[in-house]
Length: 434
Image 1 (cartoon, one colour):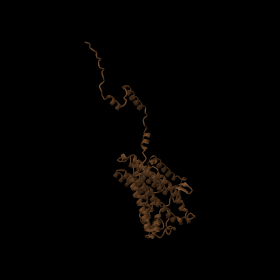
Image 2 (cartoon, rainbow, N blue to C red):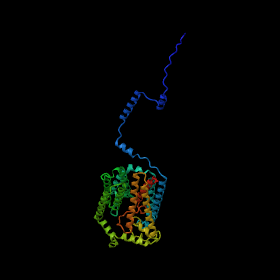
Image 3 (cartoon, one colour):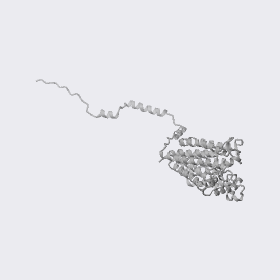
Image 4 (cartoon, one colour):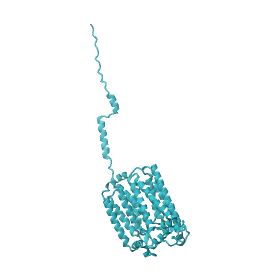
């Protein structure tokens, strides 16, 4: 009987899912390769230079561009249309109010002052379009240089031989017929600086030494330079604007009330410290005490307003501009408006400014970021407070401050600054949220 030798079966690997699991995990590295990779990443991390504080600030400043929204486009269109209407109306009223003055004062055609205002309106239109098309966030990079430049210009105004003096005031810079008033441009620079400062320190609004105090120091320095010109109306406007922006930004109410009280007392002190300003205030309280002197403008302005009646005497047919009302085309242009287009026309002008305030506050409420909100609040408050002071002065309810009516009064620097500020307001409006 023969036996057959059977070969032993070869050992087979148990069927597992190890290959499939390895395929899912992907290629793996050996322990030595993993160790070398970790050491290499640690060396790279150690060799990377530390980020400096200056470059960190630059990174923080690189904000993504705010998107233009359809609802923002509609709001910006309304703002642009309103500003255009106010500017065109102002050009018509400057032509009417300055025609007589241009003839006998400048020995020129009745269009002399109108042509100058038209040239400034062209420059202001360029400023408006450029400001409305740009991304307003870029202003945060130049907020401090703009403020320093405006302060330097206001100091230069006070230097004899550099500044130009008119009627006992040193407020202008320029050569020949090209003259600018730095105080008008300072309004916009201060608003931009305050908005940027309070945006950077929004998490520390409970610290008055880091928020309220720096703003009040800047306002104090600027106001002191303005009082040396002398000019009291602009410090009042800047003070109100600064307190309003601080309030919207979240400043403590008790601190703001204290600073407002101190600012009011200082404004009263400076108003009565100068004989010229003191006589203006007494003339406001009783203009008939000096009807041919300091009370003349208030009396003649009220006479012109009363002569207009309901619908006015007709465009160009006013009599106050025939030498009775000084500065009819600039400081007291509202009296010419009320005389020539009546109560209906002057009420429509006031409603236009109220509409501008509504659109500006709507822009602030729907702004895409904090800087845009504070910038819109500051510009809107500036334009409305200045219009309030001018109209109140014309109707005899406020002392004479010499502040022009935005977009309407004659004055190149005032018109360019107002149009530039309105352009920035439009830039914020274009990016508002629905």
